[in-house]
Amino acid sequence: MLDENGGDLWEVLEQIFDLGMDRLEDSGLSAIFHNLVNSARLVELFKGGPDSNPEAMEANRKFLKLLYEHVNKEKCNLDHQEFFELIEMHMIVFIMSLKRFFRDGESRTEASEYYKRHIHMLHYGICGYKTEGSRKKTDEGRS
Image 1: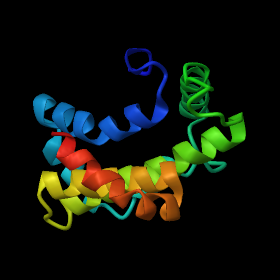
Image 2: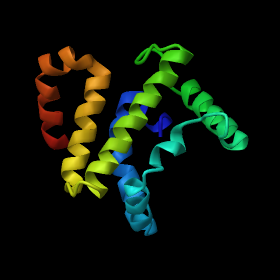
Image 3: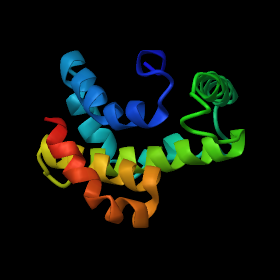
């Protein structure tokens, strides 16, 4: 997906929520994710503490390394640590968007707009986001 977008991490992140929701619906996993999001154990999936599955942690590390290698550094000049911290923040936004849809009863459109607003805030910073006019209201809903 990064290659298809010229290595533009922000373009990819902006699309992740909608693509993820499409896959959940297409695969019939929406009910499972609804239960997962409503579970008090949701955060444990992302902890990475001492009792975490070492194979899963290694697979995540390799995935993030591969992802980092495909990011266009001219468009997003981050070192490894900054990149991993950005992905952590992205995951928080992603989980909160899922929560808004599955637990809070927001429509998919509302949850998607919430996700994109927060991705833009990560990209531009809150001051840049506000200055840019909410990126012209998420590029007028992507037309």
